[in-house]
Length: 290
Image (cartoon, rainbow, N blue to C red):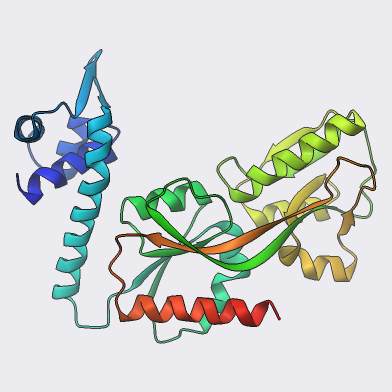
């Protein structure tokens, strides 16, 4: 069993468990990919894939191997890139979810001008998968992380609130302009809206948008209500373009707190650049909470 076996295995997984697509990405013949998978299964005496109706599905054993394989292949790729690059010039691959990418990440990057960074901003579930697959080194997020393989460091408390334009009138079927499913904000906002709808017997219409700035502009244009980070709309609240919607009724939360967190894989090698970024994040979080 060689690193090539694991690289082919992860390529099959990352391309929808398709041998054909993996072969195209690896620029090899399809039988070569199939043979490599067969050799892995023979080596460990297990089945990595169930073959049903001409499709492949990872077995529990395959899923267990996948985590280790990604880590080993990712570490080897990092080693290759590091050894082929002038020391210190490799970019630190930093991920962020949309809210932290707007509120926190620019401050962290500004405080670390000597770190060459490559930035990826997606919702929390995508960022989590990128960490597991070794596609990014570290990230700042606000949503829940499911994998126990990812370490989490609390950084800064945030508050989600109901907000609308002062011109938006209350109605039985209000429009809620929300983030897409898979985002940390949406996970919490769904619970808040359910409580509100049940208590007030509302029948909300939901618009789902993956761009925070678009949500802000639509709310400004009196198109609906949103659930959003107070930090994101602080300026709009102060200028009177947004108003915070509060309820005094029992059982209805007008706001909910959450934590911005720094996350990275537990097996990640922490080099000098990454340690510098981690230390800076911790120091900045203390400053921002004062």
